[in-house]
Length: 386
Ligand code: GLA
Image (cartoon, rainbow, N blue to C red; front, side, top):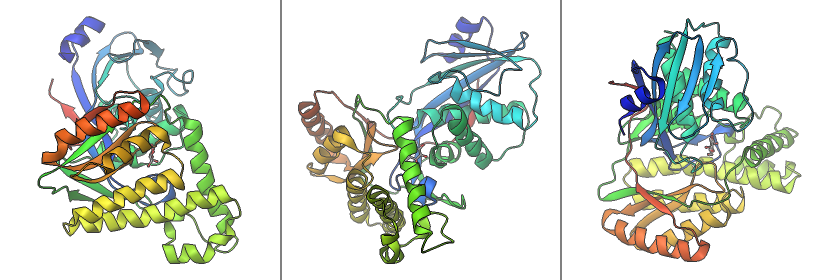
């Protein structure tokens, strides 16, 4: 795809700058970021590109090669969301954060987006749009934001302009990704460490369920609220508790009865166990114990299925079929859940069999043809040569 030519076709003049931010896949640590736990995502080699150039019309003109809807906005109309469902809310929400901080755009800009992260697949296509926009406007406005600031700007946009009370994981991974490394991130402090994915002879396979049911903001926000409710109820016995991630298994076992609501109790059970699993998994990876890492991935899926209830039949079918294949070290849902993707560690020689067997069995069970990608772990947000 010649994006420079597309820009000329769309706007009638050349782009002056280009930026990129990736999607992500999370290896383990699911639904723990907004509970202050550790996560372990990595940036993908695919993501969103943003090409831009000034215009003399005092408008921001938003165009996408993925979505037909075009939007032009005057410069005094950049701080409130458009109608729910408009794709422009993702970039606009980021630009709004700069405007609210007092930065002013002088003159308009033409903006062309193109992404190759499949939308709605749990691979953070929205975070890629947010982070590429935050990165680009930080550059244009010389705002001097750190990458962590850019991740927060993306998260804020998601909260205010997309209505999803998400954690920081997706935007952080998109901003900070590093080739062939995963990011071990403490979501309470934002301290992080790059961990090399030294997996000789093992590949990371992402399987897209193409499930008709997607994670909607309602189901996601409901989980966030249930976790807060669990903390609230636990405060009767532990008044200083801020986040579920502060609890280890022993302490949780001692105080869990304070959670009277059975649903909130199940949610908290997942979060406490998943926080520990993530710490254990990273330790296992560093020690070269890939089999243990894989077992923890499988346990993560089961916990997300039974206690957190965010998998659903499509992700369950994909994971179950993966578990049957020889050469699969671990397999689990990744991202928010319901629909979307699984991530599997698969021995290199077993990848063709994996794709064939899991693909056939999944299609037979669901009537849907899945997609498989052997993931390449790439770098985070950056400027592109034009
Ligand atoms: C979505 C959210 C993230 C995180 C995951 C689940 O991707 O955007 O913040 O909560 O779900 O781990």
